[in-house]
Length: 351
Image (cartoon, rainbow, N blue to C red; front, top):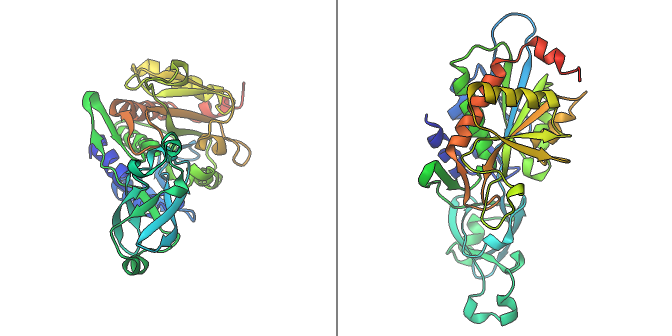
């Protein structure tokens, strides 16, 4: 399957943080043929193992990209057939009015987020973003019909088709961080062409958006010799200072900072240069806020790296990226893994 089609299917699938069952099943179906072993742990992390060559002890390399997405959850069923809701993960309330959504009740319901029309609000209200508690979801059902189909606690996802843009760009929901899972897919595809001694554990993690929980337990279980998390970073956007962003279609960003093992960073950069992949520098002065933060301190510690895909309009339903950046990040990781042997792992302990 082409990378674009893979990412499209993932983007349009449902998997609000803590409820990743649908997208997890899809990922296992699409990626299972690339792995020697596929498993699901108690929290729902999907683990794909591709074994390396040779006998005896082999280095264990963990790749982590989170499959959960931000979304909404039903909090109350109102008379008249309206739904009240709150957020699951960091939803920007400014994007919500007039948003199309899917309510995952006993059956999936297409709905719209509404509020007071502009003709009926005061000048003071018009000057402010509408608060989440002043919005509601309308699915077109009566009060009785709604109560038969929807319950408090049902998940709600943004309804947005994956859209190709000009210049090799694409937009859609949940590209944070289904793009990271797509990078793992691209890496495993590329590894089929290469020889590697390391055992690769590709993990589509859960609940990153609410506390890095999937990465915490999967890293403890795998106990890798080293790891690389794949997430997104702020892409270049009009009105945003250049120093706070990375450019789309200029290659993946390779992070450095306290959360990142310097030798893993150096090896990733060297690999990019050796195989001719353009990359960008990303500096994290403190916590990265990614799965790398949890993996680094698992058990006795894990030498960890971070690769980021530049993404515009993060935590909206029109997150935008370059498909070329995703492909090149996968290729970079594959060649990096091909260079990992026991000597490299042992050298990580020596600064």
